[in-house]
Image (spheres, rainbow, N blue to C red):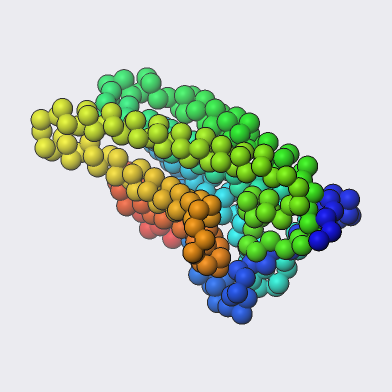
Length: 312
């Protein structure tokens, strides 16, 4: 098989196949996908609108919630418009630069999303373990600094990936069996040495998911220890209720991500179309449910949302 570097073509392109084996069902698959996408946009833009309009919600917890909403809008928007173009109009081509840009922003926003979940865990830790100093430890300025740290970490950790992809020579088969430019799927098409790219992907997964889960676990370990020292059962319940929404968001965000990563690397028994559908759902389901979870579990936010919906 002849090999060539795609960067020598003008313009070099890849072909995104959508969901191989289910091409005939693309239109039907697009219906739930587009519905999930629209619901996620409505939910997350509602969060941003309500918090922006209500001065009483300009607090660290809700600012973190807004950061989460922004990253979730970005993550789903990185993937779904192109996927829907494939499903509806059979627009399968994407330039190499467009593909690499999509990879960068998808991983960049995923890194920030994970950092925000860590900051939320720290917020809950301070609220439960040191409530008297909460207002001085977690100010809006501190939240902005945490957001900046997450942004810088995302840039520094994700930027090498696209740069490493640019140096690879690609085979004559430029077809990506996916709905979006997934890093490992692009690497598999290369005819060159991809060991550095694969090692980078593993290290990045550990840095973003592994370390962040460790920090979240430590925060909740300290929270549980503090709660167990409280003698009142009512106080137990109140303390744990403040963490319910965040725990649900963690489970719904990390579980599909870990499942997708592990099955992609280690399992050969799962059909490719099932894996592709699951990875797309991972990018759609958390952004759809997270605003609902916080709306149900946070009374103050729920009341503000009801205030605006009753005006309509």
